[in-house]
Every structure is written in structure tokens, then in C-alpha cells.
Image (cartoon, rainbow, N blue to C red):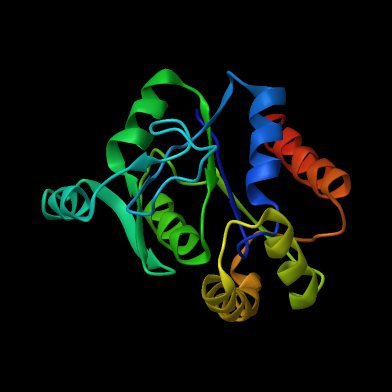
Length: 193
């Protein structure tokens, strides 16, 4: 049976870096779930690999077709998990990795608890920054947000951190290597249980 691993935390905490390393080490057994978004792609991102980049019109069409397991408005952009993506992975018998926001993790947790095929197959991990100042420095280093976007993301981070107790595991971010080792150990424990 496929295992589901959801990694969440504020923007710039290192979720994508950890997810990329897990996929590199454990693929093809572990596959990153590709979610849909109306956000414009960053220069290094590829449609269908990093996200399914949809126009607002396309996204709303899929909403009206009930194609999403969950969807959220984050930082002014729409994000969603397409139901068919999860179901396709279940038929392939691979583990799924979710790089997901706090609200999305909550929706996923509820869905899995109500679905007999997925019940007990999900673990949720929250990556917690050591401070908001550290988070702001990481955002500045990656230079993908303007000042207003950074302000919004830091404000959102405060609320996200308050919800850390909703997760199965909380990892306080120290450095990339330490954070990765902790998440890797949790995944290995899951697949060996």
C-alpha cells in the first residue's frame, strides 16, 4: 500500500530542498505529488514537474468539475491537489510526497482519515524555522519575492507556526543537512513499519 508523506511549514523554511533530496534518494519508489497553481512559474520551474501551472480560468473550470481534493488561496494565488494525481499513484503502488501548505495538510489529513484506502497511510511533518528573522534571511537569499510578498509571507508564517501542533512530527530547522537527515529518518521508519 502506498504511503503518503506531507511536508509543510512556512515559505522559505526549506521544504522544496528536502523534498528534492528525498526524491533523488528514494525515487522511483517515492514520487513528489505535482499540485496545480495559478502562480506564475519561477525561472527554474517546469510545468508538469514542479507544478501544473494553470490560468485562473483553467483553475476555476477544474473547481467547477470537482477535480480537486483540496484547494487554497495562498499569498493571493490558488493552489490545489488534483484527485486524479493521488488515485493514479495508488494504482502504481508508489509512495507520494506532498510539499504542502498548512491548510492543504489539514485538508489532506481529513481526506485520508475518511478514505478507507488511505487511512493510516499519511504522516505529516512540520518544518519550523528557528525564528522569523531566520526565515526573512532565507527569503532574501533566494530573492524570489519582492518586499511586499516577503511581508505577506512572514505574516502568514506567524499563523502557520501557531498550527504546528496539528502535525505528527515537528522538526525545528537548524541547517539543510540536519533537517534532511531528520525527515529521511522519519520516511525510512514509515516504509519499514
